[in-house]
Length: 232
Image (cartoon, rainbow, N blue to C red; front, side, top):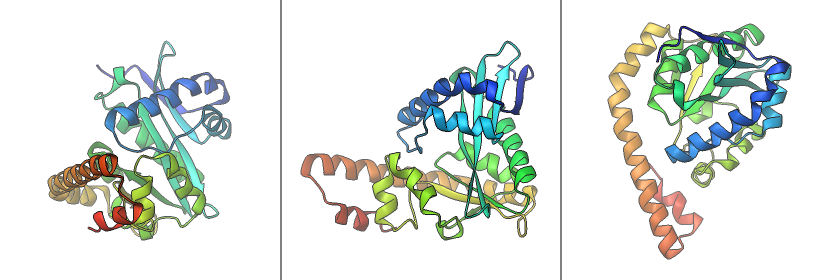
């Protein structure tokens, strides 16, 4: 499906009518992938629309296509582009990349000095981020704001995150630092070099997680063993 008739713009208060649909699709998508996502309520999405801190994609007829929003942490030192979601009917059309590009531009407009970061388990999102100039980083380079990490409580991998003292989890951390970053072409080359390795690494992590959860379900494994199991 072509996306040339799709309108991608900053969300406005009138778009709040899409909030329920957006949050439902976020939850449905996370469940289908079997990976974690920080759960957000319709009222939270509406708040981002009111503040002009979200990007929405719609067809010319007003059908909802996709969404993403901005969160700021540590007195605007860090910014996250969160909750990227695309309606199933419009996936694999390039619209996700267009939404990410617009939310990145909006973040730079509103917070020109902020470091923009993201956590993802998706290879496609990693590629989009690398095209924008993000670099893979360790969790230590992200915000220390407890409120941000509290947003991970609804994620299925939260126990892993906490057992690793917020230093590692299933997600890959990526960061754009306006004061010190590679140009997009350089990060794209790095992504091409390492994407296959990353893909294998994610498969290993996910298979180990699955085996652990199966064992935990049948034998009742403690959280202490969880920390030991994911020591890699």
